[in-house]
Amino acid sequence: MRYVTVVAYPDEEGINRLDRRVNELGLAYRAIHRMELLDDDTVAMFAEGRGDVEGLRQVLSEAPEVYEFSISGDDAGFFAYTRYVADDLTRMLMQGRRESSYLIDMPVEYTDEGGLRVTYIGTEAAFADVLSEQPDGVRVDVERTGPYNPGPRHVVSRLTERQREVLEAAVDLGYYREPREATHNEIAAATGLSETTVGEHLRKIEAAVFSSLRVGATDR
Image (cartoon, rainbow, N blue to C red; front, side, top):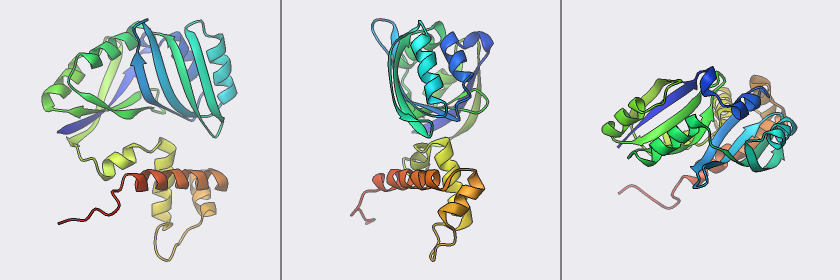
């Protein structure tokens, strides 16, 4: 079993009107945790974000493509459920996933450059399908690949981009050394975040890491 992580960059014609308006908000972080193409040709999406949540509410409430939505949270971090009309690009991507043998390791993340970072799990043959089946209007760059190991790489892949940034700063500054060599305030200074936000991120990071461990399991 192997994995391949790719970043897909749709060109201007490949970006639908709803995505374009959301992109214009300049949200600091976006990730898709679940996305399904429904029988009525709408897409149901559960996503995470950080940034202008009121701006997002306005965009979704005004967009004729959106049937319904619900947002919980604030600018520091929110989750959103949205059901909207499927565009041609999304329909092709979702139908291609149904017809192929690979799996997608969620979440799918939006990059700062406007791409979508996707990790596929499967066989070498399945990955050949992934790279050959991308629709017109999308450039796909392979970021990394290798044997799939549902250990540390998998745990880190579950963290958001900002959480990984906080974790990297915490490790570099010695926050997890004994005795501890860094404070929340020092990590905040290194990442440009508030001390409160750093504390929230560290709690989420630690929850993700510890929840992945099998307590009581030992090597034999």
